[in-house]
Length: 124
Image 1 (cartoon, rainbow, N blue to C red):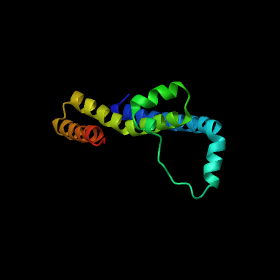
Image 2 (tube, rainbow, N blue to C red):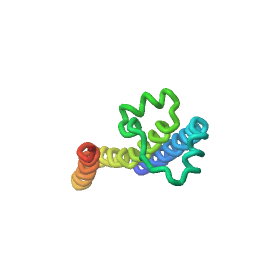
Image 3 (cartoon, helix red, strand yellow):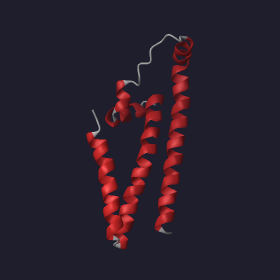
């Protein structure tokens, strides 16, 4: 199996996993919050408050997934979707290291550093 095939399959698997998690989380969320969701939808004057605080960090999402919290499972699906292209960059970097292609090693490393830097230093 070529590297391109492996990267393509990993991207496909990541998107399918993200979609599955999001749909399963959505179904669970609807069963857990059906009355609340309908009440909010009917009240057009309600202010949007954003997501719950526990859905903003991975360390607080994971315990809620174990409790089958629908919103946490949806958030995990989003995290998997975001992590999928990052995994592609890592796999490409490894592939270029194996091939000893210095130009593409440098380019992939810079892209990965920029992505990780934004993830780490972009947090408030």
